[in-house]
Image 1 (cartoon, rainbow, N blue to C red):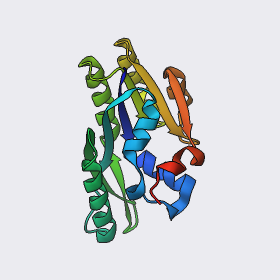
Image 2 (cartoon, rainbow, N blue to C red; image 1 turned 90 degrees about the vertical axis):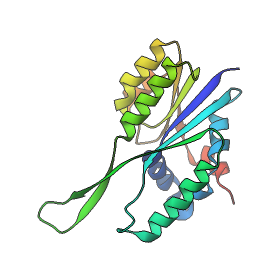
Image 3 (cartoon, one colour; image 1 turned 180 degrees about the horizontal axis):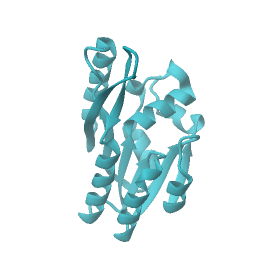
Image 4 (cartoon, rainbow, N blue to C red; image 1 turned 135 degrees about the vertical axis):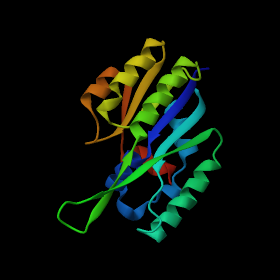
Length: 182
């Protein structure tokens, strides 16, 4: 039986779900274990890796608390690895306004995929992201005779990434609706 590792770009996943379902569905109600098993098919999920950053507690305490509860639920899933990256605050020039960006998530994902393939921790890497920046990591993983599958949302996928992966699947409302708890 093939061993599968699922690598999820948390920010990309969150906004992809929001685009499909609006605010009617919450990530807290999403069953990541069932989702990973669906993606793996008849293969065995040996790890789920989820990359994100912790929100700024002072900026929005309510969202911070909600995210903290969500992360706590994720940590309860067997073989689930929550990888927290940096959240950087950026000021908008000429205003008192600011925004946040997540840094290091892509590089952490790429390194974990490459290291996992080099250490023979999986046979198939499932990359849940549409970012074309992952193409070099995909090449490295495939050099080690591993398969790489790309799972993406419409409108947020790189054609180059899809072309370099062994298989691709667009996430649709129809596919994802059953992974939410009612």
